[in-house]
Amino acid sequence: QVQLVESGGGVVQPGGSLRLSCAASRRLSGTVIMGWYRQAPGKQRELVAVIGSGGATTYADSEKGRFAISRDNAKLTVYRQMNSLKPKNTAVYYCKLTTAVNNYWGQGTQVTVSS
Image (cartoon, rainbow, N blue to C red; front, side):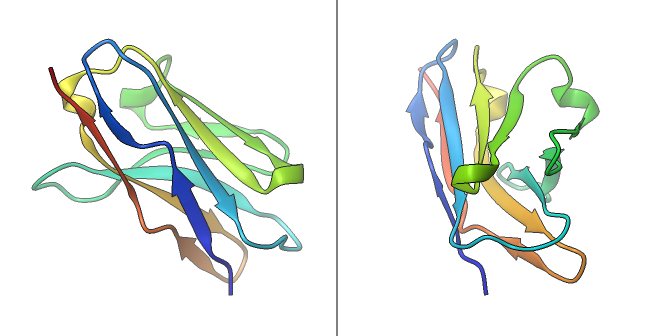
């Protein structure tokens, strides 16, 4: 079993920045994809961005050119840097780790953008 611990969420004013982190509890063998999903109030959970072990990234169309995903394999951690936040970015952000045989989810971290 793998636990994912997210941090970095909170309340921020429009235009502010947050950096989300998600740390895995142990190293896994094989291909490991890590990523972020979000669930806004009243909406389904949706992909934000994913990153492979080698650094290859995939972003949702709405995210391209905006927020960056990165990972530190030595720390088993994936990050999401969010700048110039807007109220529409308000959501619970979930970390996901995918292997060839399993998916693991974090507990979610709330991001609220409000003045």
